[in-house]
View 1: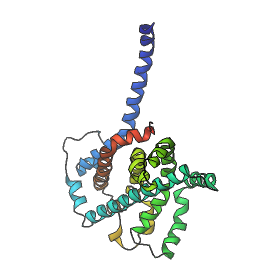
View 2: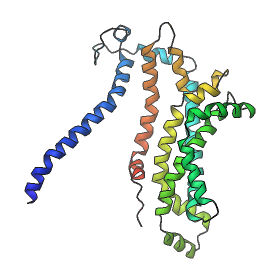
View 3: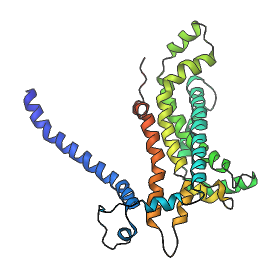
View 4: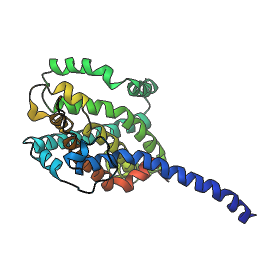
Length: 281
């Protein structure tokens, strides 16, 4: 019977694997086309009959990108913004998730519902109010004007996700720690924090990508001081109205993708367990 079941299930398994490979190819093709465009010579990029390969790879596009005097500055600004958002949103979300999970207080359910409502509001709808808020606070043309909104938009998702991790930690473990003489602070940072670390890694990936790839806030809040711009703004240099430099755009986009891939490689093990969301007793 098992052999018959395996024979029946095998065709469906092959279909599922083929569908997964096809989906992966469709998702990965834009990334491949971007990298290909970065290495193509100018003649092939401007050709009216593009081919999905190149026989004469060139580094000219990368030279033009690195030739931009402020490119290093933009990269550093992006790292500062993304790093600050990841660290601040992770710590605040961890403390907030612990509070709404372990403590009982009035309006706790209302607060959780507000987190969900905040996730439903489009970022574009809040850009103009945020602009006036940053202007009145004197934060325009500063990195703080990029860091603070991203922290605010990252927190609802991070709190909701970490709430499940904190809730999965048995209360008996907390009681045992208190009986052994551990203070609340010690339990929080030495016991609970390592257990929810996979969830923190998972939320940090989304926070990092959102802050790293941000163009809307950078375009809206960095108006005159270009020294405070980030990497997405650097790509505008290659968008000339009469003659856009698509090779430079593709090379710059490829370079922007590398830190994200490195970040994924560094946290991939904890990311898998974090997305699984399982904390065992």
